[in-house]
Every structure is written in C-alpha cells, then in structure tokens.
Length: 289
Ligand SMILES: [Fe+2]
Image (cartoon, rainbow, N blue to C red; front, side):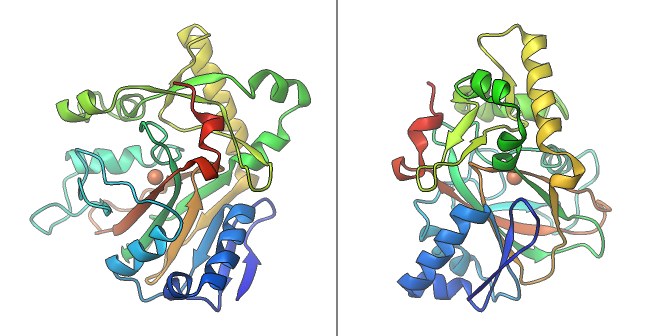
C-alpha cells in the first residue's frame, strides 16, 4: 500500500489497496484508518465500486447513518447526490433537486446538523459530467492551527447552533419540506472537535452553522463567515477532479467540502455513505446540547 500526499496541509491518495482489501484484511484496515486519522481525505482511484462494496468499506469505520427524510435514498444507507429526477432525465434548474445541488455548493461538513454528527463520508462516483462537478476540500485542522493563540483560546469552547434550515434557506426559503423542518431541529456543537487518536483539534464549521447563542445574530454570522473565509483560502483547497471508479473518504470532524457547479443539463450521480461518530472518535468534545 502506498500513501501519496495530494496537498501540503492534508489529503492523500491510497494506491495498491482496493476497497474490498480494507473490508477483508484487518492489517489493511488499520493502515487505511491510520492514514485517515492523519490525512483527513483519502482518494481511491480505479475501484470497482458497487453500492454493496461502498457500504461494506464504510461500515468498517463505524455504524452507517440512514439517509435523512427529504433526500433521494431516504431511510437507506445510500444518499444519492444527483440531478437526475425520478423519470431518468436531468431536472430543470428551478426543480427542488437542483436547489439541493446548489446548497451542496456551500462550504460544509456533512451531518453537523444531526443529533448524532458524522465521523466520515465516502462519495463514490457513478456518472460524472464531462467538465465541472469537482469537489473541493479544506482542512479545518490546518485552519485551526493557522489561527492566532489568542483566537484559539477564545474560540475553543464556543458553542454554535447548527441547523439544516440555515444552509438551505441561504439558497431558497422554500427548499425545506415540512418533514425536514419538524424532524431536524437545531443542535448545539462546540466550535472545535478534538481527535482523541492524535490530539489534533479542528474547527467544526459548516454552512449549517448559523447562530452562536452567546452572541447577537449579526455578530455570530460575521464570526462564522470570517472563520469560513479563513479556513477556505484558495491555497488551502484540494480540488478533486472526479473520474469513473473514484471513491473519496473524508473526515467530517476535520474538513469542509463543497461541490463545484457543472452544466445542469448534464447528468451527475454519486452515492454517499456516511459513518456516524462514536465515543472513540471524540464525540464528547463537540457535543454541547
Ligand atoms: Fe456534503
């Protein structure tokens, strides 16, 4: 197995190891897990990915989330990130699905708004457009390190409110379904997540973060926007150009990502499996409810 860094701050490509090797071989899993804790984003190329292989691989890292109400794939372990409608055709730009795609183009970390946040996500490419549609990543561990000592001292334990409504309403106030509004109340998280394996702290930020209970609304939004800008400076971005057979695993505790637009008339379909965080992943450091 070879681990090749893809960026100065984080992200690496794993070669000489298939997704199934990680499922079948405990030593391979240990090596990949170690690389995941260190590099935060792992890229696997030229994989024979089926939904089942992706789920088996993901399950090696922890329990899988069920996809939330209102999503394509709701109630299963597969979240379909797609602009293909139920009739098999790409949706119109004003379709709800197109707006959900647009919301994925805000910097975020997956599931920060859920009662149980996510350790990691794996995205497997199924259908990719000829151009555009890349995914950008940043390390919020590196962003934490780049803050001044005074900022780190002031911010480490700050409590932030995350809500699915905050991120969706930035795109369109009509995207949220009644079921989403009812089943996804806002949750409180600390602004940092401490990795218990290596003692590294990271900023826990997302488009879903929209309020700070101890601050007036405008001041909170300005603080969160400023931190997001700090975390996402262009030199800190790893941009993943998708190829058929790619699978990318990322640490939701220590990264943010966003989708890049593509011509919406071109179909794009990828499948995400999401691994819930457990006590062993430092969950207690971030919960503030
Ligand atoms: Fe995402």
